[in-house]
Length: 158
Image 1: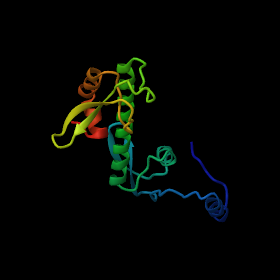
Image 2 (image 1 turned 60 degrees about the vertical axis):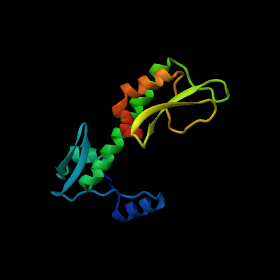
Image 3 (image 1 turned 90 degrees about the vertical axis):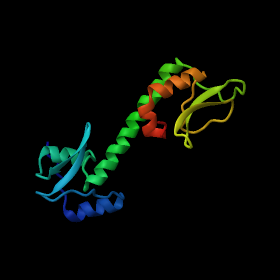
Image 4 (image 1 turned 180 degrees about the vertical axis):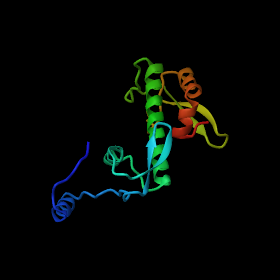
């Protein structure tokens, strides 16, 4: 499916300026660009095909391998966070921390950067932003050991 805009260049520039929209970089015909696929980064040549259009209009179209690599890494982190959140929910079986209850312990993993080893601590009323909380110390350690790879990617726990 080809997408075409049937407006003059002058009108297009005016609309872009008015709505503060920038036109993303696009390779000239026959020149290379980069895109991210499931488990890798690929180089392609702009041939004005439907695939080129699709990658461009979905934002998966990069001028350099470095920019594609940064997007790929950001995507890996988002996917890891999703897996971590799902595992936390699964282990806690519906439990969520009650920050108004000062008697309820909330256990969370963290990385001791001096030893680069995972540890678990607890708190009763201070929420650490971005942490994963559990109702028991055992659950927090189980989370760390089962999710080492994702934790390493997201919060550098090895």
